[in-house]
Length: 165
Image (cartoon, rainbow, N blue to C red):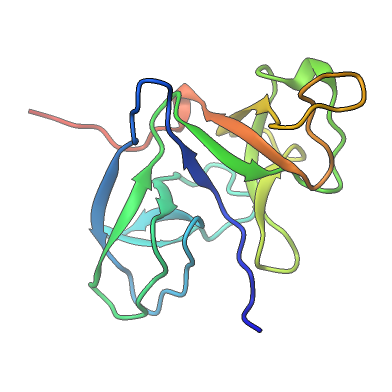
């Protein structure tokens, strides 16, 4: 049985925006899986090195698994301010009603190495706001549960690509 990797997936908006996918060359010896966070290193995409990411720039998320061959062109779902992604909430964090759409969250790889999640422990360089979940809790609220799926929105300060004329 193959290992299951859990990363981030884009949620199209109501206007049908499918997000922004750009293509970059793959760095040397990459093993990232679809949905894992990527950053640029010497102009090539590599899996996010830090966990939590902290001040490291987040480019976006892999749209397909790495080939493992240097300079192979791969699609990357770019993190634009306001984009919404489906993610997992860190299983050892607590979450309060007041955290929805107010508290910043970072990205963290769980100890198992196969799950990337939203992390509340390190918020010095927050990249996302939690919007809620797709399921109602016992009170009828969209409140994330430990280890459960959440919808997150990219914060304004997270965008790392700038376009020039």
